[in-house]
Image (cartoon, rainbow over all chains, first blue to last red; front, side):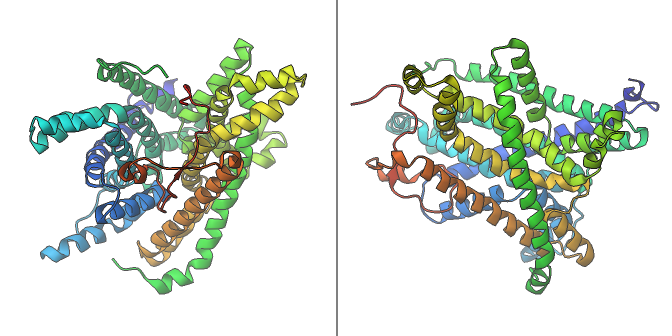
Length: 235
Length: 267
């Protein structure tokens, strides 16, 4: 257990730093994906037209390729992509993309359509009377979205959102292959120099299981709060 | 930021080699996962409390851990044990391919356990009771009645899981196996072209996942052909066309009768 000590003798601090990177990465990508996913769900709500087509093609690409490939693409080619995006505005810059930013952007790119799909079908399952009632009361358009439709859709989509959170958390493990020093990279270094791989990878497994269990527990409590005032169906 | 078609063409053999490795691993893991998953599902559903607890722990550990960590555990961790290092088992565990298939297989099988368990417990009591009343031995009832129905119920969830783990096979790069992503990376390292090899590899992954998806959908149609009495869809056009499925292709405008008996029949 001395190997897990905090400080110069053990690898406790390295592992903790790595875990912090993992958690940061997961939280940032998930929040960004949730915001963009909401936007995408609202924009592609009508199942026809150009926006819907673009949304379908994007979702098909993002869900059809591994996230590690996207991470590599943004990590190696991010500078060129940003340059190509900025060039039309007369900005001739080639900014270096930090690995963390590339990883967050990649995971956001991959997980946005998953969350958008969940939210879109939830929006379609909000009882129609809610929208009609709000329109009859001439509630402003923006208020209808923010105060009537989206909160109810979020409640319906909530279990799916929690699922995706767990999947994304485990997917962050891949970023160590792209050179980010997350928890897995820290464990790899530690087990390489101490020849105790079982111990360190065991710690990583325990961390992932406990952390996802804790977030699921928190989410379930929140879900009960969201569901107050809604009668459970008998079926 | 350009796509170099000439480079894509010349790197095609290397990428196809990598893709073959990805397919090989995927198929092997599916086989390992099916066998392990079936066995552990029986353990998980055992009436013996201790056995059931072991099954639950198996699912919690192997489903909760990211597959790359399981790969490292099998590849770097297990050889720490002398039972692995000093016996003929070492011949197996010295091979990265074996370790990759075992590590991913453990992860996949834990999902199979839960999918199969869900399917088995969704089988209605009626057919099972009918088969038992006809005097069929319990083993035959399980193999011929419960299992086939459970497989049909669980197929959709299994399809999702297989598609997710096909994409997670990229983790085998961690144990020095050159799969499709590894091959693309190699070409990047040689040419410093970040787009062409990765985009080509991405297109191959896209074809693999979508091919597999179409295969599963065909299997689903075939297994559920007794439900082929498709009813014309009379729902409003907006509802009808807004299926949230991930399908890129247009869905036929018919609705399958529900595979599971509805809780309340509406006559």
